[in-house]
Length: 158
Image (tube, rainbow, N blue to C red; front, side, top):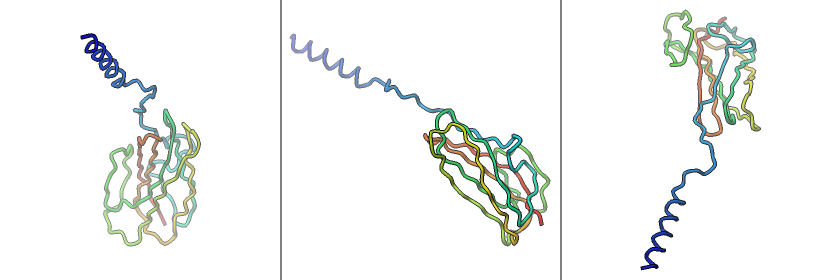
């Protein structure tokens, strides 16, 4: 009878300790943030960029934990599609078919244990691309996989 008692007690202790969820790790439940709305942020909504010119695209990103990577995506908006996070609506040209649209998509790592970072990417707009309505989309991912995105309307002009 004593063996059954001690065995039951030992099994109960093992069961309780093996099911403990306190492993000392704090779970990251926050997405990183992106802002273009500061004095150095570029481009601002509805801004016009000239073909053949070079621009420095800038945005501030931050996270409660550690940032891992970011991306910049420039693509045409000749069909007037939208992104769900756009704050400003700009005047759009008539819908048109793309002939030689500008498309830029690059991903970058953020090294070190950084919680804040300023994206700073130099991009030359080719001279021979279609002018018109475009989107500028920034994305940032933290080390646990949370991602945030923001998009703005811009124009590429002659």
